[in-house]
Figure 1: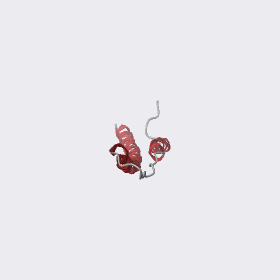
Figure 2: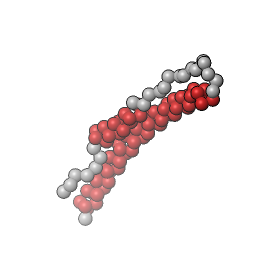
Figure 3: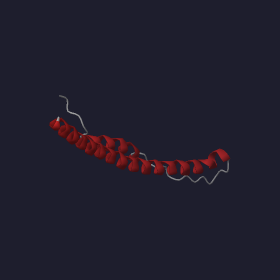
Figure 4: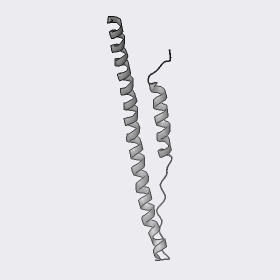
Length: 94
C-alpha cells in the first residue's frame, strides 16, 4: 500500500524555499536629481518609492503566507492522523 499524508519537514522546506524568493528582492536607493526638473526624470523618485513600498508589502505578505501555509500543513497532518484513527477503529468494530 502506498503511504499517504503530509511530511511536515518536506512541507516546511518547500514553503520556506518559496518564501526565499521574496526575501531576495531588494529595494532601490532613493534617487535625487538636482540638475533637472523634467517630469520624466523627476518622476523616478516617486516610482522608486512606489517600488520599494511594493517590495516591503510583498515581503510581509510572503512571510505571513508562509506561516499560514505551514500551519495548514500541520493541520492537514493532524486531520489525517485523526481520520486514520477513526477509520482504524471503525474497521476494528466491523
